[in-house]
Image 1 (cartoon, rainbow, N blue to C red):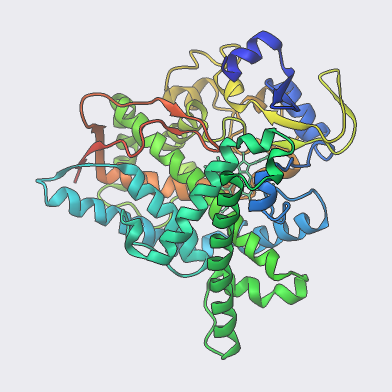
Image 2 (tube, rainbow, N blue to C red; image 1 turned 180 degrees about the vertical axis):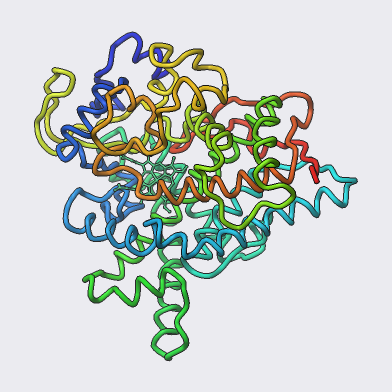
Amino acid sequence: MGLQKLAEKYGPVMTVYFGTTPAVVLSEPEVFKEAMISKGTATAGRPLTPTTRIALHNGADIAFGDYGANWRKMRKAVVTDLLHKSEFMKRSSIMMTEVMRAKNAIKVQCSSNGGKACLSPRRYLRSTTINVIYSIVFGRTIEPGNPESDPELHELDQAFQELFETIGLGAIEDFMPLLHILPTPHMTRIRSVTNTRDRILMKFIHERRERRSTGAPGSNNLLDVLLERQEERGMSQKDLLFIVNDLVSAGTDTSGTTLEWLLLLMADNPASQDTVQVELDEIFGDEVPSTIDADKLPVLHAAIMEAMRIKAVGPLLVPHQTRQDLTLGGYHIPANTPIHINNMAMAMSPKYWDRPEEFRLERFLEEEKHLKLRNVDGGLDAEAYKFVPFGAGPRHCPGREMAVFEMTMIAAHLLHAFRWAPADGHVNLEEKFGLTLEPMMSHQKLRCSLRH
Ligand code: HEM
């Protein structure tokens, strides 16, 4: 039975067993608010499985780190050096360069085919979101749509993807105590992929350190900035490795997959695509500028929000864990219990949304226009927490503002320059569960034609 159906049957707080491990699943905005806001510090832990213990060195990163001093120090560093609006806006020209490279690569495909091409948007969107992070962090990129163009980055990307997928889906060893101590093929593989990722990231860190020690002119790369401030912040080599790890693993597939869903949904809803394109044409004319203010594009913004609601890339967000005994929704929950947020059930519940299965721009333009992509703090009515794609409370996504800016920029360019349509009369919107909710049909193609 799907989690949505389970929520309907068993209510807002239910216990489920993943193997022998009990966990609590929260499925309603009121109890979500109670857990993440009113009792936010008591639920701010993260559960570690045998797989994440290996891949993340016992939670040495931000996303799976224990809610304590080291987590706070690392989270503060990424917000200060990159994710704060004033910081990522300083690097908006890097983002713009990557968006233009992707747009030009698609234009070349179309131009050599009489203005139309049949292509997999995922190839271009993934390479763009990867390039944005890689160029900001290390100053290196791959060719748009061609992940094999830099073998070292490709090897790193393969390692990230494999780790991300395994962490998302979990493995039998994660649910069967004892099994994980055995050298099963899965545990051996996870160790090997973790070593590959660590080796390549460490090499990048050493290269930047060497460059700095020779007095070579500094650069705007995030890694240089982190190295410069490493000592004053009391950061270890491992801290740097895991900051970089989290920026790549949390900041690429999430935005790339959201944008893929957006283009699939636009192709499936031509009238909504018309409305978005009318807005883009009215505001920008023939050329989209380098900096875009999402607030000035309410229709595009509503389309992105609706894509994030109907195809939530984080169907269960990221798991939390109780740090002490507490009550939620009137139920006693012991310390160290994993908590999963049934984000998908909240975003698709007919109890909270009118015709939730339908993609409708009017939803966020009219009846739900009070809802914003920033429902991360307290002070809102409980009902507002039915839409929380970035989580809420002390562990909410620190990359939210940058993600919204980046996605708006990429979507504005790709929807202004091209018309997107099904490749063979039908868009497949089936979903595949993992740490992110992806389209089931991997590399589904769309027909893309030049608009100008
Ligand atoms: C569409 C894009 C994105 C979505 C939907 C998303 C969603 C999320 C969610 C649901 C969480 C967990 C929140 C919680 O536990 O309450 C999270 C955590 C996190 N995200 Fe994002 N995210 C996105 C983009 C980004 C970007 C671009 C970055 C950075 C470059 C980023 C960095 C992080 C980090 C470091 C965490 C861990 C925070 C912590 O545990 O303290 N995310 N994200």
